[in-house]
Image (cartoon, rainbow, N blue to C red; front, side, top):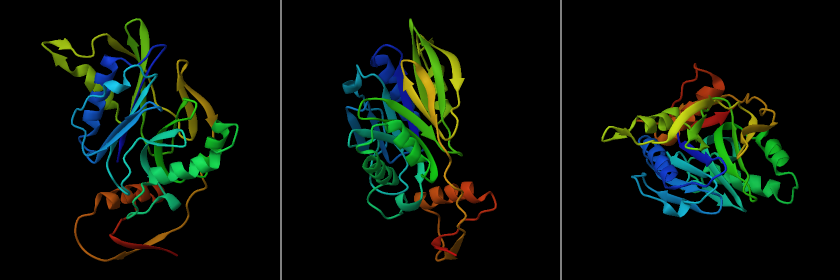
Length: 277
């Protein structure tokens, strides 16, 4: 599925070298996620169709943080990150239920954000609202979410991946995160004329976030601020009616992965209509 990435300098702004680091993660993520790409700092969102091929983005210099997204389109036409009502999301996975429809023009990520912003509107405590909404969200997800006041959150369900790394960056620190840990580690293995491109950055520690926990990423680090209940287990069974031969589409592959997560390794996906019984 998709790749999402983060860079958060501690007590300084994003600089040109950080942008090169993000370029590397986007290039690595684009190898298997070729449909769309995008970046956001909450105030500026740049989301473009097509595979990322190394475009630079100087407009993000000076940002407090930067989130990136490589998309493998499984449903809808919406590139990410997506900004709506002051909220910005970068999402990996598939929101199921009312958000999931193979032929819809809107992606599941956009439909989820529309529902969440409508739910959160007017509520004083955005974290409590987010926790309650996520506790009713089914499917697989790993997401960064920027609030209208610029706070940066992360949350995930089971069966999704995310790695945070704390780096020593000269006289300060840098938090780097990605769906695929190799997107971060690979940057430190690249060299030019025998010299490491990463230059001043050095690994200090690694964090694998817990599921069903909201983290806030700030100058104080990556901190869990609210746990929430996982949604009730899905007990609906499906019957697949075989219709035609041929390779599965990317959407069907993603659905197959998601349902295998929900129903176990014995689940077999066949092309066709799915009926509840």
